[in-house]
Every structure is written in structure tokens, then in C-alpha cells.
Image: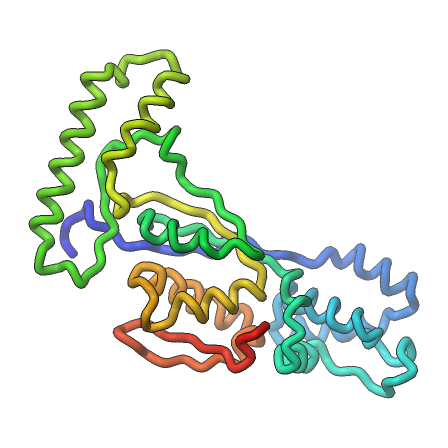
Length: 266
């Protein structure tokens, strides 16, 4: 794809839920469960993320198993890593809703964003506003399967871009100082822009929603662009959150990974 106006999506991992260790320590001291701090130190040495540690804390909180002595039914407690694996295996999915991960994808189309926003539970979205942001150069996100008709796509892109610029001139947008009217015109003009127009979206998912969405959107029958983006997310996270992928199966399908989880119900 040599045309600089035909682009491909790129996803970045920009945020995650962190531990407030000061507050957690105060709670553990107040409830005489300071031993759990040793488990946290060990988990960090093992490379676990703060998000995974937080999820384990909530799982252990449910069963009073942060340390021995709080629950008379147990004589030993699992490490944080073993607790995460056991929680996944038991499909106690609600505790994974406590950790939230944040992403931003650039050069993505509204084909992708329209599909992404269907995932409403445990997710959040902030997208380029078509009301406020006026197009300059029209860039398109193009599925490589359309390579045989790249020239036709470029002809269509140039035609729409030129018409858009003619509309700007005729409506006087370049010299207009009334921002309210400018916004209304920008909003109205986007109706001629294609779904393939490149834009940006920021989104966040909790770990439970993330696992579900990865399985749905890396599937071989999912739309091309959403498969590409969630493959990028998988590539970013498998080393950072290895336990979350402990029950995952990976299969290469059409150049992308299809991810299925054994305990998919969490």
C-alpha cells in the first residue's frame, strides 16, 4: 500500500488501574492482615501487574483469604499468581472488573468504531468529533483485500475530497468567525464523508470485558479491521498480563491470531 492517504490502524496502550499501596497498607494494618504485603512483593518479583494484584485482592477479600487466620475454614492461602489462575478456572469473573485498561487507536475507520461501540458493558469511548473537527486531507483505512481496486478507491477519495473543499469555499468556512455556525456546517458536511475515513478513538475496558471482546473480535469471522486492532491489543498485553491469557488458545488464521479462552464465561 504505497498511497500515503491509504492508512492502517495503530493501537497504543496508554493507561491502567494502579494500586494505591499506601491506602491498601493502611487497610491491611487496620485489619491485621499485613502478611498480604509479602505476597504483593513476591507477585511484583514474579512480574505481575498492579491490576492483576488488585483483582487477586478482591478475590481473596470475598473469601477472607488474604492471610491465614481470618477464615477458620482454611489453613493455608494461595499466592497471588495461583489465586488469579484459580479465579479464572472457577470463572469468578466479577473480580476482573476492578482492573481497567486504556487504549487509543489512530488511523482507524468508523467501520471499526461503529463495531467497537457495540461492546457497552465495562467499556468507555472517546472518539474524534465529526461536529468539531473539519476534514483537511481525506485519508482512508483500506482493507488489503481491495488491492485490485486501489485506483478506483483513490479516484473516489480524490473526488470526495475535492467536493468537500468546494463546499468549504462556497460556504465561506475558511473566513467564518461565527464558531457556532461553523460547527453546524462542519457537522452537516460530514454526511458526504465515507465510513472508511481515518479518525481516532480512545477506549477502555475492564479485564473481564477485554477477555470477552478479544474472543469475539479476533475470531476468524470478525471484520478485518477489528481483528487487526484486537490482535495489536493481544500483542501488547500478553507479556504485561500473562495470567489473564493463561487459559488462552492461539491459532493463526489469515495472518491474524484467533484467540479463544477455555474459561470464556468470565
